[in-house]
Image (cartoon, rainbow over all chains, first blue to last red; front, side):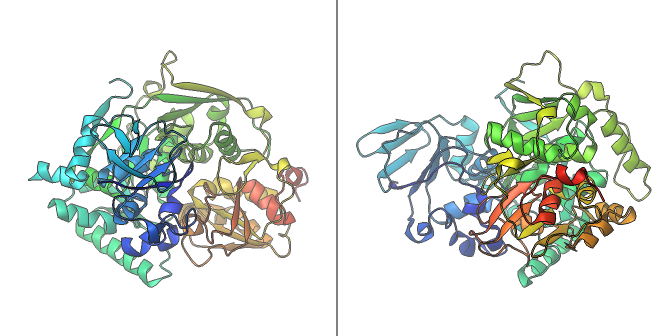
Length: 157
Length: 415
């Protein structure tokens, strides 16, 4: 599935992804405020299949899983960043939200159409391909199952 | 085990709180169709929605309390912030492998436990199976040598390091703090160091156990009310130190004697600078709070700066002690009275506005100097509020002048 790119900068933190004051409600209410301090129109304009492209240390801060859950709820198909904060990275995988890192070219433009392939580790654009760092097999297995709970269900079945 | 290898690890203890805990993991455990792998290895602490000042918050606390009773786990209800309550109640031991449902779980590294934060799904996996996976971390050594000047402390060391290596400088590896500066630090200052390994983006922030650690643990075990400090069979501290010939991923050498009090400008802990460089910024609110900055030691340090002075007119000073135990210690020796006489308003021992909760969140255009760990945009209130980070001593000095101020000026003339 392809979608549009939302280009974001470095150090996008979990308070931007899932603001603390909206944490007591459900994910639907919280997701409406996802990234509103960085990009006020984000929740209204993002569509299923869209991708986030960001700089260094995406997801810094809290362990709140809603940071990844809000993106998934809004239909984001994956996040590609130069680097990720460790807890966010684990959370995203556990929720089945693909996260991949790599050196991203400056030529990527906001709104450009792209598709993420986690098995081939590439970001496919209309006219070029960006190679990403391959994921370990155990992480691909969790993502393929749709997250940790679905993955563990097989074990408890 | 090689660095970078993905391994499955048995978990000795899992700590959860009211926000990321029962309300989030219970549906996941139900979906898995399994219960707790071992309720004896679970500690639940309510701190985020305490004191329950909204309908939703009260419902979350109610759910938390019911779940604790049903699942028969150890529950510390409204006793303070989890990262401080957990060690104070005797749950941590050097050498343990512990996960916590909160990013500042790395605080446990001050007690020599390998402890790190995870999200709710990760936690559900741990609760269901008793194990988790990690990538074997490399070690980033932060070696501090020299004597800190009076008025400079662990918080200043951490802000300086955030400025130096950045919020991703920890690379999600294990940081170890070493050197003669660290050896001299009391346990609660060590907790500040380990706590803010989170702001460096590390997985863990470890301090090798020594005499300070064992004395802290022995004091807890000696206390009759601490039923949870299981056996006091401490591991040989020498066995839990990094080998002198260990291979390090990075080795930063830092000079404590040259360090000045630090502040971090909005909106990142990495915007650190000496307090003298911040241009006398005027403040509306001075906040001493959170696991990072309102422990007993932090309150004592702030009280020393305040002396018998009163805060500046127009400044609101708020104090949310990190735990009830710390609040009681501060009450017993007059520290709390000094803070309140100076004009501090006492708030509940809970995460409070540091985590974006409660009625005291910062309004737009409010400038705050805070002893907490994070000053991300909008975290403590309106996105148009401005939060500067500093040590409890710098927060106290700034409350006295109404401008971000160097605490050393006041320590020289303690009233």
